[in-house]
Each structure stands twice: as structure tokens, then as C-alpha cells.
Length: 335
Image 1 (cartoon, rainbow, N blue to C red):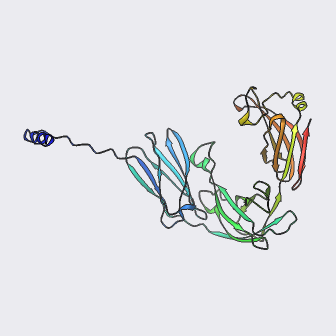
Image 2: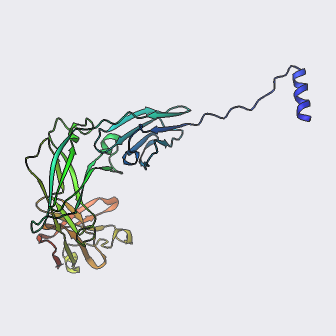
Image 3: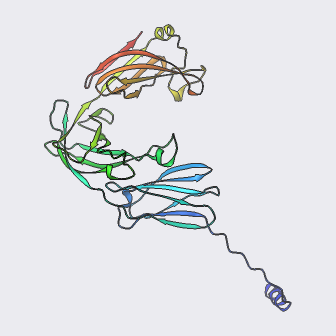
């Protein structure tokens, strides 16, 4: 009653009545995937620029097309890439300065041409391996695209294949080199990583290795591409205190997360395969013990002595020409 009387008096006096202001438009960006695509297979990675860079992958779901992007007051632009296996990469960049919400609708994905390939998987005795699943993947080159030198490195699956009773699988491999995003100076091939299933004939994950571990995408294949599944070798041992004393190593040789950091140094160990120069970390345990699972081959073991702020102080050769055969368990004590 009192409110109504106040309004009537204000109108009679010709005074303007204040009305509640509308809330400011909510600021944000929603990325909308195109219709008709298996949204759960899309790899969607977004970078927000403003006060530095924040980049991350969105967990896409089946049947869900809209994915909101969090923006703070300092955000100025957003870059994204969207990858669907067998299709060209979709990229976009938009400015997001100012208030308001908007929707960015991505265009339809364009299918890549394919090439037929026969795969063959054998074991270390050259016998066919049926029912083995292989996964082919590629790097999405997020460092180059988003412009950061360290941090999240994103990959994606190109396809998977499972071998038949004869150890073979027929696939249609997408010609990734024809995607402008991945094209490298007109190269006729493109390298993919390839890995076996988590388990094979009772061996746990990490116990078997695939050779080769890279697959070259070409425009034609004259015959089957053969992969060999081999059992990895176990290398265990201990670096004796006499080795540390002789080489004047006084660093912290306990695992990184357990180290007490009473020393200004940290000592790590690596195994480098001498024919490929691929490296594996085999962190030292208390007392100089180590244990690592490696693919068959010949290795060089090194100690890496790190100083303040992770600065490399020096490297020491622990052992060279350490030959490991398939399925071997090797014990190596270094004095």
C-alpha cells in the first residue's frame, strides 16, 4: 500500500521512477561442433590468450555439440583445433575482447583420401599373431600451433586394427600428408607412432614391444607392412659406492619424489639404445639400485649429475655395450 502510494505521488509530481537495471550480458564463448559427426571421437583443444596462455583439451561426449570456454576479464582471443580421425584438421581463431556471449560454429569436417594397406604381425620366431590390436597415432603439434615451448603435448588416434587368424589386417590408412595442417614441405610420407594392445599372451602392459614403432604413411604399398612383437628385457642392478667415490659423485641418488635434497646435486640415470639413440629413464633407487624394462638391443648407461635449478653439471658413462636379448633378465652390478 505504501509502495503504491509513493508511486502515485511520484507520478503526480512528474518525477521519474528508477527501474532496476538489466544484469550485464554474460561473457563467454561456446564452441559448437557440426551436426552429423561422432562427437565423442573429436579431439578438441582450446587455447585462451590474454594474461599468458591457458590451453587444455575438452572431454567431448556422444551427442553433445556445445562446449563452453571459460573466459576471464583479461582474455583477448581464443584459438582452437578440432581433430576427427580420417578427416582434415579444423582450426579457428576468434577475438573475445568485450562483454557478451557468442557461439562459434565449426564447419563440417572434410574426409581425407585413403590408401589400402595390409598389416602383418609376427612374434619373435616369425609366427603370426592373431587377435592383436594395433593403434596408430599422431602428434597434434599443439606446441607449434598454440605457441608454447613446454607443457601439454597432445596426440590422437588415427585408427586401430586387429589381426585375423593369419596375423594380417586389411586397413584403409588416411593420407595425413594431404591435410594442410600437417603438410611438411610437400613430403610424400608422414610418420605415425604405432603401439600394441595393453596385453599380449599374458604379458602385462610395458612387457612387450613393437618393432618398428613408427609407421610411414605412403601413397602406395607394394606388399604387407610387417610388425614384430617381442618380449622386453628386465635390467636390474646396483651402482656400488666405490663407483660414486671414484668419480666424486656426492649427489642425492634417491628417487626424485622421495629425495630429501640435503645435497646441492641430483643424480639420475638413463639407458640409451646405441643403434637408435632412444633414451629411457631408469631412476636410481636408494643405495644405488636400479630397475628398468627395455626392448631388446644394445645400450649405454649414463649418470646425469644435475646442479641447482636442474642445471647439468656432468655426465658419466656407467656401462657401454650392454646387450639385452628378448625376454632376458639381466643383473648388472657396477663397481
